Length: 375
Image 1: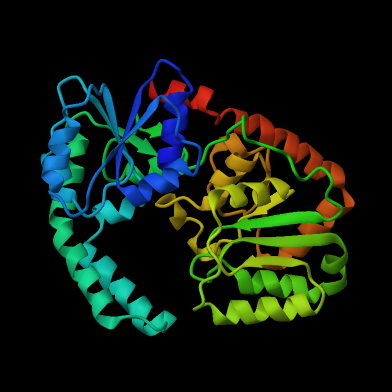
Image 2: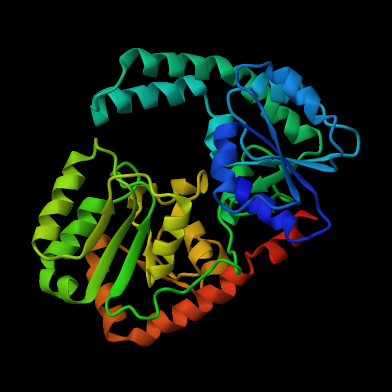
């Protein structure tokens, strides 16, 4: 998604030539988002070949800027790679804590969660090997992040909230805010205009780890007739088979007549966009005790608001950039959510105004506007 956003942004200027250095698998995903024009050239890395040789090959291309959109596994190669003189480098942060916290502590917490909290059926040795590798990789991961803090690399973050969090580790004053998802006017369609019920979309993988489904479902079941008659809930993301409790509860609610859309398969980007365009509003049902911590790693709902030109419903404690203040309504606790939904139903003008504001905001995140942040 980040690659698509960067490529589409630079491609908005027909004078730009874009090279994408990636793997075959990633290329397929990137091309599925209509990134196959004459401006774009793919250079593929064979994962059986030498990564250092591939990095040297990159230096043969006439690049005036490089974006590190995904730095993983080959931290040593990234650390020693020196682009050609006068080539600007941009590094995209996603999960800030991954770069600054102890990998050993992160992996201990991950293994505890996998083996004792989630209790999923997993390959024990595979999980252990991954954790050991990640701890070993962390030596060069920490060296790499220290290097970019000193060598003039342009830092790219997801939000102003992330800037505040990152400031604890380095000078993030001049970091560039650039979203994971962008608004694409050429592809956008408002498919919500004929909705007879308010369609609420919750984008992202359907798990109880970072999102609060149980309390949301309590609200729906406690006011069954109201939601049966007036709302559609689209759980727009894959439900892992391990989430048996959520799957069973959804099935029970559907049998009671609630209109809940769910998916037991990974949704491709084209279908995802179409379903997103059908929604009236996006709900971020994050865990309330995690909402302040998400300065480290932004929630997907923010970017889907941009992508779909949709308004949002967020917990009051969640730190949103000021760009979105006119397209979001907030709730303090899940017990208050029903009153908010009743108000949205009784006053359709609210959603209408929120949608108009959301469109104005999304246009600011179109390629033609975002390129001004990078040039």
